[in-house]
Image (tube, rainbow, N blue to C red; front, side, top):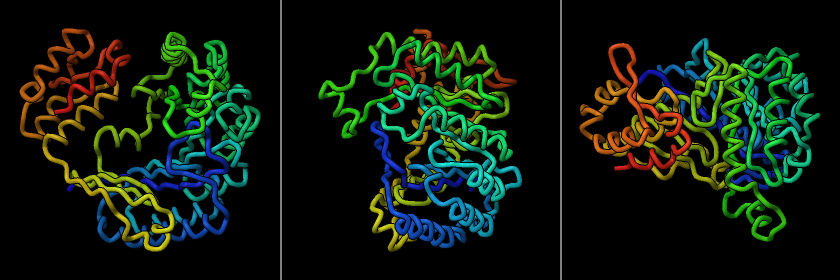
Length: 382
């Protein structure tokens, strides 16, 4: 059993659900939020004894909108975690923030509680685009939140931006990137995602009714290429398909997902991976509130083949790729022996390449391969 573990806490509440969002989240009254935070505390107390002796290297409060919950409740939950889990001294502790739900007081409480990383959802610096996709904040509110975070002492902050929004042009998207890069202090991490319309969301309904129009495929690709060019010129390294960071500020928690490190999820719908067993909590809020310690479902013990698939499928998202030596150590087989045909086909096509790494070697997507990542990675499914 590995000694390290990551913890994830799902906060399923928001002020208003964004039109593109298909996550497990919804608005709720204060009584429901209070009951939920108390249920999370009970789940922590129930789970902790099973993981005694394991070092927690990162904690992540995601959602939903964790900042939609009273800051003192979040701080109290974190204190309980610290008392019952072994938190590493240098653990990365992140909370996702909506600019429309934070102020200096709330950020001061976060900082005092030990939260050392923020992930702020901007999406666009254009108020019209924000309104179109149902965001509750403006560019001005984001700037105010950014300034408050800096004044509260946060230095490790991620900004989320999105491309291919309805009505968005290359010019307006470049304005968003330029606006983010002009922030003082400059962000150390930027996540840049292309909008994926999800069935069942209000956004897809509006598109099907002809009320909204997405950028065409060529414009979408132009935005994608501009992201890489502009952020790399500004000193950000692309370390994962959609993530860029200053040296040393890569998100340790998300990197753990891509590298298949053990993680334990708390809260309604939260997923976990422990000792090659995947499971998740049920997604019914009422059931979770009644018995948060007994709501697991979808337990899947991964076969060696499934673990190998995940090793490649997830690991190739990282621009450093995957280690052939680590693969052999984990599975007792050479990567070439299991996936030789797939690797040869994609290296011949210029989508994958082998790189020397000390005495070993790593398999990674090429620049062209990153553009076709889903196509390449699907071929590693046994």
